[in-house]
Image (cartoon, rainbow, N blue to C red):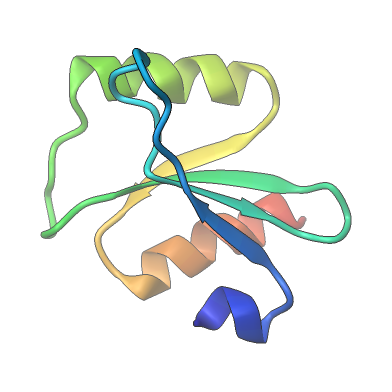
Length: 82
């Protein structure tokens, strides 16, 4: 809902045969893209497959991270817009 209110597009990602790809992709009207791996609790661990995608996507210039609550997810999206 926050993404809709901010005019952002938030897509749930399911990439076949690409284990560990981030759960969500957030796009804004300026071409900024944020990839977010959602975790259920504080201290949730990033798997080796997820770490691979974090490194691959961030190496391409995307903002990538994990979030266990809305505030953390918003911080990642804001970071992509800076």
